Length: 301
Image (cartoon, rainbow, N blue to C red; front, side, top):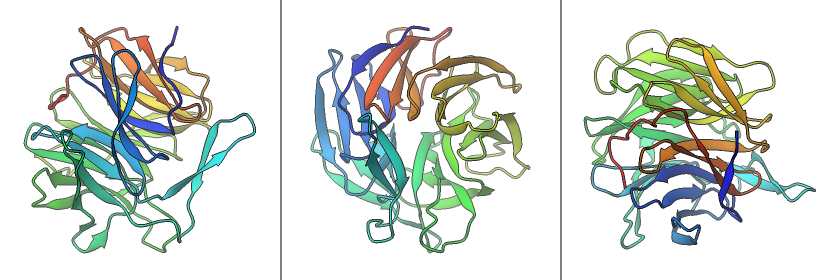
């Protein structure tokens, strides 16, 4: 598989969103910022975001909804120039939040900091459904003595309500919905597994989660996207790859990226068959051709 460099010089890119005009919006966790990359590769900062922006999605109002891990992570410059990631100490960490960015003005507002009085720890990724809400994973932050459970929440885009949807996930990272919206997927980072649960109603998942696919020892998982065939396309940390797992739990393909900090994937282009992949360690966005179209998001830029 051939990867083409789209942009470089980024400070740990994550949360890519492909726009209709060929540009990409993403977050840079260690700049920290919401960043725009034009169709010709020109990089510009939309706005700075205090903390650690970790994922993004377009909301029903056209604004960008951003997972902010509250600077739960810190960069470490490796000998080869790459960026490695470690947990921040408690003095650097400011607490997690869901923030909203007005793309025209760059204004940042905080939508959620707590759920039923419990602080958000390190919100990581989010996906909108067709009902005006979104699912958001909380990877967790181990330095504060909070309870070990790492929830997946369901929240209203208007800021009126956030509630636990999945209570005891193990370090949930990327989240996605099946094409018909009836199944929620998430990646558990250190466990190296993709999980799945039936969505009974918006934000309601009463059944027991099941393991969709267990990756081999040594593979950690980051964020994910869904393609039009319902396959789960997930970034693999460590060995550095994009893996494609079918809705029935079969590994369809694995594409090495050469970057141990492979963080995320999104789909764009006129036919949505261009996969854009964020490489955190080397600070790049690269592209490749996918075998089918990516799933259209509920809200797009």
